[in-house]
Image (cartoon, rainbow, N blue to C red):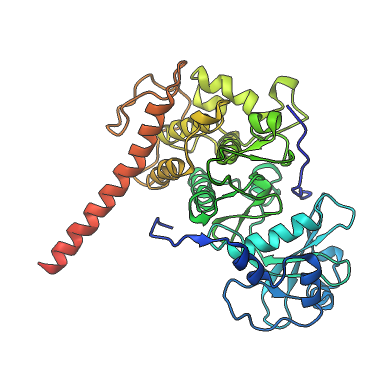
Length: 419
């Protein structure tokens, strides 16, 4: 695989509804932040922030305010470290709000262009599955970003750097995180106008709040999607080893399906508990996709793919469906990968059928059967000659069947109350 520089840090240890398109015109971009350039941003941040006139407008902070909030960027406030710099936990004196402050390393991987892109993107894009940018500082040569504080840290922490006093994520929580992350990506792909390609979807960029609700973070590498009759965006290869789509690594051509591949890798992380890239493993097992893909094709036992920390506490049917979705996402042919909307429908179905909701399920150790007795399944998606159209149709059927059932229930309840 090609070279993909890493931009994440490693720590030491809703329902669908009608949504308005987010217009990302040049006028709103400039108006949201107040300037096209870093120089313009710098001039704003010397004074204390005022109350914003617009709910989407990011505050501007001076360096002294953020130094006080983080106890002068003390070691005890440090919660993350990476190629871009450091992340500190802080508390704003003016509001008492707990925040996360990202201080960019002047010699680090994230430059002024990425800083500006992140400010612009997060000032305009608002969704409950995207991290909230509170403000920024560009005083002197300082580049700082201020986010809402996410109490549970990153998904990467819970999958790969679990502390002794922490419990591993259970199956229901993992599917909740997958569904929420998919909805955040769906917003970028289908609601933003023009659409946004995330380009850096990975477990370390999925942050979790107190209730383990996921939010996508770090938008410095995000790109606007292709416009007009263009099918892709040509760009310098950036991202993270193990998550980059193969066609992007080879050609530098970026599409929405590049994000879908990355999402499939994250979904495999949630299912298997393995890292996207683990240099400690044997060569043939270092890349999660290379290790998992043959097992998925060959219909291996679910227990061979499931995270041992789950201890068999998951629904065999849900595990199979989640693996099917992951397999669709990581196909080498980008055109055969599903859309993010299809993925959201499938994962909504899985989260609507939580493990243990109707009594304890049998521990899973047997081989996946050739046929499933569920009336919602009409095809076997994981065979050697995988058929993408049938698979996507079935994934959509899971979600649409569940959604229609909920609508009928709501209509019946309404009729009963009016009767």
